[in-house]
Structure formats: C-alpha cells, structure tokens
Image 1 (tube, rainbow, N blue to C red):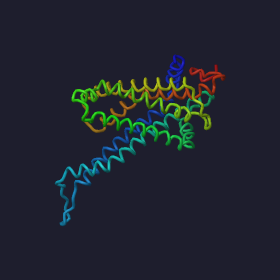
Image 2: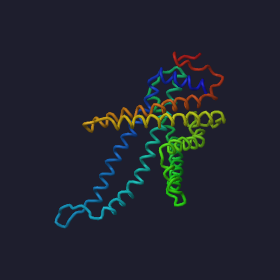
Image 3: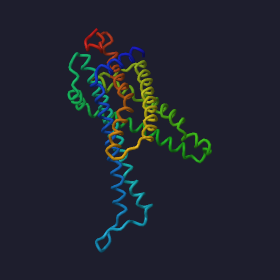
Length: 283
C-alpha cells in the first residue's frame, strides 16, 4: 500500500498530463449540470405557458400539474445526465491508464492518443457505466425507503438525514460499490482477455476508492463553506469559481485513477522493471 501511494504521488506530481482526463471530465460534468438547470427552467416554462384563442400566452393556474409534468420529463433526463457523467469519468479513468502505460513504455504522454485508445473499447466503458449507475440507483432507492419508512421514529429519521450519517453512509456506499466493481474496473484497464484480478488487488482498490471518496467529501465541505462566504457580482464570476472548485474537489479522483491504473498492471508486470516516475525510465 505504501509503495502504491508513493508511486501514485510521484507520477501525479511529475506528470501534469495525468491530471487532464479527470479534470476535463469534471468540467464537462459541471457543464451538464448547468445544462440541466436550463432544461428544468425551459420545461417548466413550456408546461406553465398556455396559448389563448386570441393568440396570447397566459400562465397555467394548475401549478401542481405543471410541476408533475416537469418531473415526469426531468426524471429520465436526469438519469441520462448521471449516465453521461459516469461515462465521462470512466473514459477519463481509461485515458489516465493509457497515459500511465505510455510512461511505462517510455513514450511521450500524448493526451489525444490516450483518449483515442479508449474509443475501441467504448462498449466496455458503457457497460461499466451502466453497472455503476444501477448500483447507485439500487442504493439510492434503499435510502429513500429507509428515510421514508413509517416504521422509523422521528429521531431515527433525523439521524438518517444528518451530515455525519450521510458522510459515513457515503463511505459505506462507496466501499460496497468498489467491492463489486473494482474487478470490472481493473479488467477495463487491462488488455482485452486478461480477466485475472487477485483478492489483494481488489482489497487495495476498495481502500483507495474509499479514501478518495473521503477526500472528495471533505473538499466538498470546505469548498461549500468558502463559496457561502464569497460575494460574486456576475454570473461569469460564479461559473469561473465553480469550475476552479470542481478541479479542486476532483483532485482525489485523479489520485484514485492513477492508483487504479498502477494496480491494473501490477500483476501483469510483476517481473518487469518498474517505472521510475522521476525520469520516466525503467529502474
């Protein structure tokens, strides 16, 4: 574990290119979130606006029905947004792995070339993304049932929605998802046909995934506090600050992607010379 952490930090600090895939995915995901806000306003306005026989427009008096129709449209669009976001980050993970492999082979770490290598395996990327979304959906549905159950007392329900519980619950959820999906992630980062994933690799993958989630949640909390105290005068300032904060919050994911990339080749190259991250040459 210490050696994995050392190599991850070395690669992360020495090769700025390894930051690019995850950072770009984070910015694109932020863009999808902004697009969703526009969609919600547009769909709501569409259902709320009625056309009179005289050619004018009037607002609907049944706002409850407007909200219901808007939700019916936005639920599937929201699910599609989540799937697209997950696909972006899975592609970033695969691209990061390709960059790590280029460095191991003493090649120039070309970002465009690394991304191009992902496309032939896009079906695997999409399948992994669907698995991840399904896992999130099942766990999310369980959480809704748990917090809305009439059998739970008011005190228990307050506990279930408290920040401390949600933080620990998020870590537990990630541990469960990682245990299920780390083998699939490792296979995605390896050449096709290599399906052997040891229990040690699986456990290490779970540990680093949970650690990255803990770091991300801590950064989200700190960033939220800073944003709450910031005074922004224009929309462009808000967008710029949000983009910067997105890059900061995604930093633990960059480390996670590099660590998973190293785990993916750990068994395959156990007998091969290790990569010296400082020089880019074999030891």
